Length: 488
Ligand code: BES
Ligand code: MN
Ligand code: ZN
Image 1 (tube, rainbow, N blue to C red):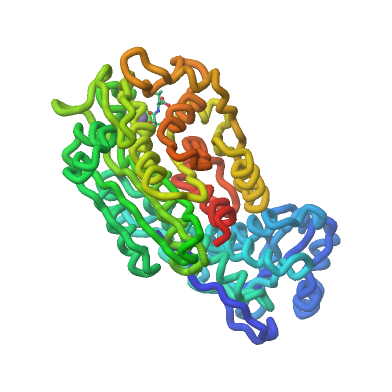
Image 2: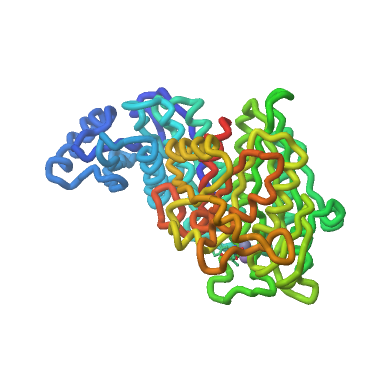
């Protein structure tokens, strides 16, 4: 719950700055970044000596500190110059923030590492600096690493790009916070409060329907999942109207399952605590909406979050129950642990039935199967519209957030047909479980709305530590991709 929040550009001479750490870069071919030579000279050539002796390699993320009067000079390895793209810059930003945190300083000045390429890479540098500084300590009485990184100056950086990078990264930090909070803190009510807070800042219309309203509107699938818990469920909508009245809105739908026990089809106890992360899809929506609230892009956007716990008790929904979703389709519940698709069925049919959308995308920690298929590095995607899928892939390339498309062919869609209802909430059992989830959701996308589903079960938490990623806990992955996709 702490991260760097101030990133500014400075055109002062580096020697006049009073930041505690001055950061320069070194490429793997022994080339220092432009300012590096000045700094080296003022340190009587000690940096170049270290390079010549092989003590400094320039390997990505490897750093070495030198001391000059009151100041620390940090030489950060940037990897091969030919590979120094936006993702490498983001990683360098993350490594710088982590090194600064380790040295317990509160201010750093960074040579604009992107000066050699594209000014807009400043956005990636700012993202890396903020994301790398993220820590979640809110539930500790005493914070052992109490020093916070408060300010980063980028020498001759591009101010608008730095600002945008910081805004995007703060959206990611919000998503990380919400994901990391336990189920008794990040409740549906808390998610609704966050949505309202963002709505006030960004001039959005935010509504949070309660249990009676959910039942009254005919959202029988969300209501069924929620009936096993006393925690009040919420159906949250956020409308941002930054574009013209003719511009069709984009819908972002996020699974806000604040704790998934599996329900009557209960999960094994091991790692069940991780099911507090089952609302990470909704955290993506909130993170994007928070960034939109400050970027104020000229587009129309609707955020939708169905939110509840999935518990078990005398009132809980049972295997075999038949439910009616918002669009009137009936669902046979074969497994109460396939609850994410149930609450999304109502959310997708609600937003695609009531709005003429440019497209809808949803984010959900939907299946364990996607982790088997793609591990923790890549988000599984599938959808109904080739153009939209191509755009998602292009945004993925630009932002370094990996996605991989799975096929949503008719053969798979047949697998969710039920003998007693219109559809059932599982596919064939052991095979192609992630696609079965997508095939089920497809039944609830109305009006031929172009739609893409993101199965983030592998990428929302549990990935290997990256320079700009957390060592453990929620990642906030895919927010950068979505902000790029919607053109905010
Ligand atoms: N939230 C889980 C998916 C999940 C499991 C995410 C493990 C991350 C790690 C989801 O609600 C779920 O339980 N899915 C079931 C579906 C099955 C019953 C068809 C699954 O993946 O086992
Ligand atoms: Mn489940
Ligand atoms: Zn779940």
